[in-house]
Every structure is written in C-alpha cells, then in structure tokens.
Image (cartoon, rainbow, N blue to C red; front, top):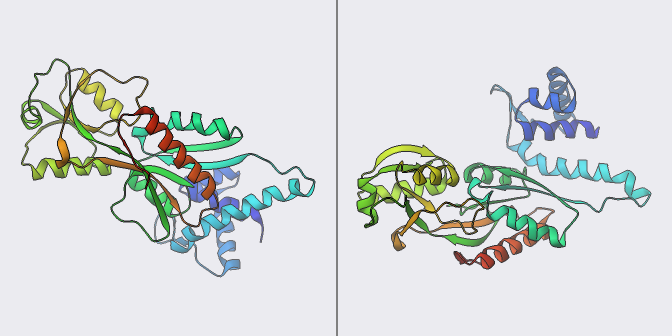
Length: 299
C-alpha cells in the first residue's frame, strides 16, 4: 500500500475535490479517482459518498484522515531518522475566527516563537462552525473560536477570554441608552452565520428592539470602519487584544443581559500535538492577561 495514495487522500480532504487535489499532486482527476478506488479496495472500506457531486468523504473517510496524516509524516521522517538527521522543526495547523487575526493571533505567535523558534505554523481563518468541523475531522490540530453550544466527547475545550459585547457608535452620534440608539440609527449587523452574530440577533428579538438593518458584514474591522464613517451603529465583541488600526468610536456597555463571547482553544483529545496545543493555550492566556482589556479564563 503506497504512501502516495494517502498523500492524495489528504490533498482531497484539504482542497475539497478530486480536481483540486489532482492539480496539487500533479495527476489527472481520473488518476486521482483510480487511486482512491484502489485505496478503498485494499482497506476494504468505502471512503467517499459518490452519490454527491463532487464526491465527499464519508464518516469512515474523515476518521482515516488523522491516521493518514500521521502515516505520511512517519514515512517522511523515516530516511532522515536512519542517518540521524530527523528534523527538529515542529508543525502546528491552527484555525482561528477572523476577529482574532489582526490583534490576538499575531501577539500569540510572537510569544510562541520566543520559546519555539523552529515552530512552523499554518493558520486558517474561518467562522466557528467551520472550524469546529475541521477540528472534529482531524484537519486542524487546534482552533481558536467561540465557545460551542455542544461538545463531542472526543473534543477538548480550553477557554481563555470572555469578550463583552458592546454597542459601538460614531463619535458624532448623540449619547443615550443602547436601546434608543439601536432604534434611532441604522444597524450594521455582525453576520448571523457567526455564532456570536446569532447570539446578538437572539438578544435583539428577546428585548423587542426593532432595528433598521443597513448591512450585514462578517469582520469586526469592516463593521467598525462603516460605523466610524457614520453609516450606523453595531454590536460587537470588544477585542481582547488591541488591533493596530483600532478606530476611535463610542462604546456603550450592554450589561449582563447579553453574555460575553467566550474564546477558547478546541482540539481533539487524541491529538498527537497535545503539548503544543497546551503551550498555545498558555500563550493566549498570557497575551490576554497582559492586554488587560477583558476577563481572563483559565478553565
């Protein structure tokens, strides 16, 4: 059973289709399809749901990915280890919600590199629901995301920050109570595809606050820029770490009626990178504590 088939399988898992994987591994789509059929025959299991177009990994296929990744890594290290040249470079594949990519994650990477100078990090931005699925399937070693409502038994959750949700308004806006401001000015909504966006929408409905929705965006930076330019008001999590381009806006507390967004590190209990994931969590705690902007969580 050649390792090349497992490389192709990993390319499909990462890139999504046989066609994209074929380009990455320098094969034709037909050759990729034949490799996967041969792999299934040798393993005696079906790895893809071929009723879908393009074919998608089925549960057995997803379960194989972490093992395939470990097998390919072991193969790549085999020859160097025989002559005492095994690489000391460590690899960590991390996902993170986009709201952390300009403030929190750069600072965390700086502190991580101080003690792990040879660490190679692959960092993918995505929304929490997608990151949860990627960790669950073994595509990511860990992800920084909002606290999941439900946690599978094989997953491990380590919270590190509680970001309060605040109403933001341009400096030119009249001061007042948040409900009045929300009804007076156009509302720029944080995407309801994001977990925190759904929580904000639920809060508005439960409070009976009717907003005049002007637009819906999915990054804090884009929403803040719209508010800064007087296009409306919004509700967002307060950054746990200041960003380089943070704008001067009016902030209004919403109190305990809207729970904070809890950020944490999600990983699999069976990950082979447990030590690195724990170190990442420790660095995140340190960075948030040093910033002193929100409550630090250590659970």
